Length: 581
Figure 1 (tube, rainbow, N blue to C red):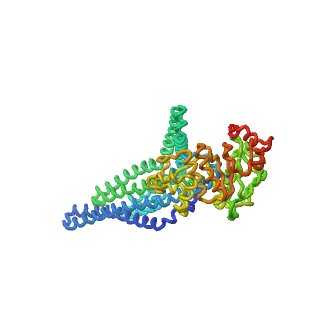
Figure 2: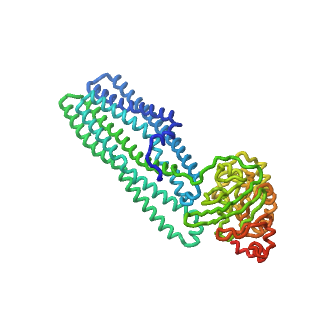
Figure 3: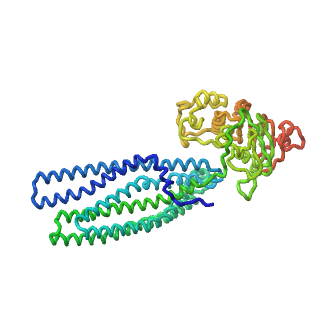
C-alpha cells in the first residue's frame, strides 16, 4: 500500500506541543503589536485635526510624544516577535529533523542502497527548512492578521459604513481567492524539492568518488550531468514560484481596485465637509494598513505551499517501514555464542539469488574461516548475521535463538564486525574509538589499543585521546585503519566477532604483529574470519568454502588441509591465492 500523504493537524501539532508556552507568548506579543498598529493612525488623526483647529501646543507635543513612545514600543515588540518566532521554528523543526534521521537510521539496507547520502541530506534538512516559516509564523501571524483586519474594519464601520463595507468586500474577496487557490503550488513545490534532492545526490556521489572521476577523465561528463540537473532545478523552481505567487498577484489587483474606490469616496466626503482632514488621513492609513495583513496571509499561503510539500515528503519518508522487523527477545547467553545456518537462501534482488541453501554449524568459541572467490557470498553471510537484510528462506540462529526473534539492540550488543573501510567522525580520538560511548573509560581504551599495537600511535598524537579528529583532516594508514576498526569492536566485548578481510590492508610484518593480539581477543568469543590470505586462517578451527553461493566444502581446518580431494587443501598445497579472490 502506498504511504498516505494526507496531512493532519495532529502530525505537526506533536512537534509544536513542547513549545506551546513560547507560542502563547508569541501570540500575546503579536496582539500587543496589532493594538499599537491600530492606535498609531488614531493618534495622527487627532494631531492633524487639533493642529488645524490651532489647539494648545502642549497637547500637540503630548500627542507627538505618545506617538513616538508607541512607535518605539512597537519596534521593540516586533524585534522580540522575530526572535521568538525563529526560536519556535528552530525548536520545532529540529524535532522533525531528529525524527527523520532516527527513522532513516532504522530503515533497512535495501532502502539505503537506493538513496544517495546527498539526497537523504536534502530530505532530512532541505525539506524541513521550508517548514520553518510555517511553524514560526503561520498560526500566530494568521491569527494576528485576522485580529488586525477585524480591528480596522470594526473602527471603519464606526466612521463611515459605505467605506467600511467596500473594504470588507475587498477583504472577503481577497481571502476567498487565496483560500480557493491555496494548493495551486503544492505539487510544483514538491517537484522542486525532488529536483533539488537529485542534484545534491549527484554532487555528493561524484565528490565521494573524486579520485576515480579525475583519474578517468570524467570531469567533463560530470559537469554535463551537473548542468542538466541544475537546469531541472531551475525549471521546476521557476514553475513552483509562478504557481506560488498566483494568490499574491490576485490580491494586488483587488487591492488596487479597493484603494481607488475608498479614496474616491473619502475625498468626496471631505469635499462635502462630512469628514475632517484627519479622518481622511485615517481612512487612507487604514486602507494602506488593510493590505498588510492580507499580504501577510498571502505570504503565509506561499509558506504553507512550500511547507505542505515538505510535510508530504517528510510524512512519506516517515511512513516507510523497514523490512527488518524488530524482535521481542532481549536475552542471549553469556560468553561465546554458537552460530548455525539452516538452508538459508538470500538475494539482494528478487530475480537474483546470492546464497543457495547454506547450512553449517559453529559451536561457541570456535573460529570459522570463510573462503571463496569474489561474489561467492562471503560478505553476504556476515551481513545476514547482523540482520542488515532479511533472508528469503531458512533460519539463522545465534546462541540457539532465531535472530528474527531478537531485538536489534540485543543482537548488536553481542555481535561485532570489523570491515575493511573505516569511517571517521568529527570529534576527539576517544570519541572515534568508542563511537561516543561515555561508559568506556580511558583505561579500557589504552589496554585494548596496547594489545592491538595502536597505543604507540596514540601516544604520538599531540593531545593523546583528546586529539581532535575530522572526517577530512586526519588520515590513517591502511594498517592504522584496520587496528582502529579492531579497537572499536573489541571495546564492546562482543560474544561473536566477524572479521571481514582483517589483513587485506596490512603488510606481512604488521599482520604478524596483529595476529597474536587477535588470537588473544578471539579466545573470549566466537569468530568468523573472511579472508583472501590463507595465512589469516592458520588459527581457525573450521573452514567453509563457498562457490557461486553454494557450500562446496565445510569441515575442520586440519582435516581439510590433509585431504587430497579437499578444495582448501589444494589451495594450501599450490598456494593459489588468486582462487580466493
